[in-house]
Length: 84
Ligand code: FES
Image (cartoon, rainbow, N blue to C red; front, side):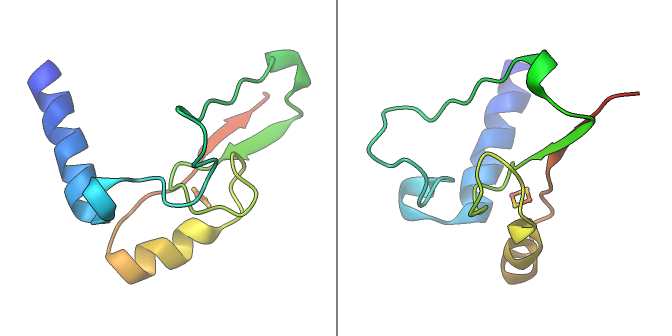
C-alpha cells in the first residue's frame, strides 16, 4: 500500500510538471506547510474544498480546476462536503 501511495505521488508530481514537481505554485509560499482546519459545526450545508491548488479562493474551490484540467489533461476536482 505504501509503494502504491508513493507511486501515486510520483505520478502526481510528474503530471503537474512544476519546478521540482511541486503541486503548490502560488499559495502561502512563505509558509513551511499549508494547513487549513475547520470545525464541522462551522461548515454550512455544503462546502467545496480545492484539491488542484489553483483556486483564487483557496482552500475553497472556485472552479479553476476546469482550466487546469483543460491545459494539462489532468482530471482533478474538489472535495465536496454536504450535510444530509
Ligand atoms: Fe481547485 Fe476546484 S479550484 S478543485
